Structure formats: structure tokens, C-alpha cells
Image 1 (cartoon, rainbow, N blue to C red):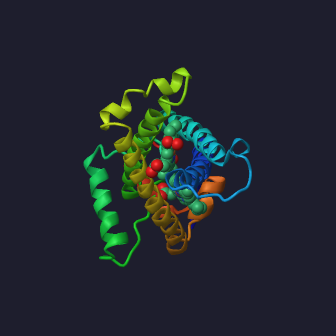
Image 2 (tube, rainbow, N blue to C red):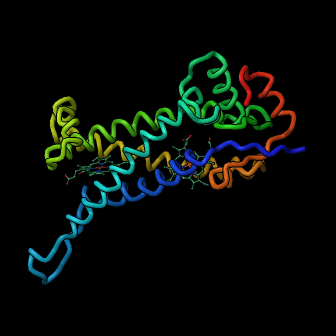
Length: 231
Ligand code: HEM
Ligand code: HEM
């Protein structure tokens, strides 16, 4: 028997897809900023603005990325238990135990079974935590670099960052290297989402669309007897 559980609330799904969209835009425009094409054109230099538009898209996406990230952190305090910050930060022995169980079952394949969690499994949650730390570094270095190019007060809040990271050149390098983490993350993440969808057959892929997952009755009961504050 499968039970339908509402796991990902609308703000989490909205965050997820806006984040995915702007991430693709930031990586694509970031590559261009790092290594621009030598565009061959007869036009007067004053009529060309390719790099300007690319940077404009990068910065517009950067603001969306930043405020969306802040909204997700807020939701980690007011959302349902699957969205809670405790799902990301190993705060208890049970968290570490579950991480080890997932490593044994899903990664090392030491047991011929799947670890069935309802929200994020502990290892996934911890990986998102590391990802969020890199989001923070990307925002710090990005807005730190941007401060010198903007008159608005908001980016000026980050004007101290390049000095902390050893100047503009190193800050830009760190910003560039961090991008590769996200590229790696996205490849593995999409693989794992499809893997879990197939292996578990509980609607993993569509859960980020409609919010629902299908959970075995026993797994649901086990989770609820272990959780002190079930919804
Ligand atoms: C640029 C592409 C993507 C990025 C940056 C990304 C990022 C993330 C992040 C940060 C989370 C944690 C969400 C939270 O709790 O707030 C997450 C979870 C999730 N994502 Fe993605 N995602 C991407 C693409 C996709 C795609 C294509 C799918 C396929 C449907 C997908 C399905 C899911 C699902 C089902 C979860 C929850 C499952 C779990 O806990 O492991 N994502 N994603
Ligand atoms: C996932 C998020 C992001 C990725 C993948 C990304 C990627 C990149 C890359 C690859 C570069 C080129 C660096 C180089 O020259 O080697 C770059 C430049 C830059 N990015 Fe980002 N970025 C992200 C977020 C942000 C954010 C949040 C801001 C905040 C405003 C930002 C502001 C900048 C600035 C100011 C530059 C330098 C532009 C220039 O000198 O013309 N980025 N980014």
C-alpha cells in the first residue's frame, strides 16, 4: 500500500526551479565572461554591446539567485519539516547514522536494499548544505567584484570582500572555480534523481513538480513513530 504525502511545498518547488533556471544562465554567461568569443563584425565598436548584454544577464540572474536563496533560508525556518534547516545540518547522532546507512546502501551497494526516506535522505541533505555554503561564497565573491562597478548601495555592502580573498584577481578565480562545483553537482544530482525515481518507484522526479511522493505505509509509520512532532 502506498500513501500519498505532500513533501515539497510550493515555495520549495518555486525556489528549486527558479534556482535551476538562473544557475544555467549564470554558468552560460559566466563561461562567456571568462573566455569571450572574438566576434568578427564590420559594425562600428559603438554599435556593439555583446559583452554588455551578457554581463547584464549575469547580474540580473545574480540578483534573482541571491534573493531566491535568502527566501529558501527563510523557508527553512517556517516551512514544513521536510524543508526545515535541520534536514541539512548534521545536528544529531541519528543524522550521522542515516548518512552512513545511505553511503552503505546507495553508494557502496553493501546491502541489496534501498534506504527509503520521505524528504531528503541525510546524505542528500548534507550535500545540499555544502552546496548552500558554496552559494554563499559565490554571492560574496560575485557581489564583491560587482561593488566596484555599481553605484547602488546594495553591492557596496560587499565592497570589503575582494580584500579578504586577496584582491580582485584571486576573488575572480575563486568565483570561477566554484562554478565547476555547481556543474559537477547538477550532473550528479540529475543522475541521482532519475536513479531514485527508477529504483524506488515513488515519484521522485515529479515530486519537484507537484510536491507529492508515494510512500510505503510501513515506511511512513516508522518515520512518524520516530518523529516527536509529526504534522
Ligand atoms: C540546474 C539544475 C538543478 C539544480 C541547480 C538543482 C538544485 C537542487 C537543490 C539545491 C535541491 C535541494 C532543494 C531544497 O531542499 O531546497 C534540489 C532538490 C531536488 N531536485 Fe534539483 N536541481 C536541478 C535540477 C533538477 C532536475 C532536472 C530535477 C528532475 C526532476 C530535479 C529534482 C529534484 C528533486 C526531486 C529534489 C528533492 C530530492 C532530494 O531530496 O534529493 N532537480 N535540487
Ligand atoms: C551559480 C552562480 C554563479 C556562477 C556559476 C558564476 C560564474 C561566473 C564566471 C565563470 C565568471 C567569469 C570569471 C572569470 O573571469 O574567470 C563570472 C564573473 C562575474 N560574476 Fe559570476 N557567477 C555566479 C554568481 C554570481 C553572483 C551571485 C554575482 C553577484 C553580482 C556575480 C557577479 C559576477 C561578476 C561581477 C563577475 C565579473 C564580471 C566582469 O569582470 O566582467 N556572479 N561569474
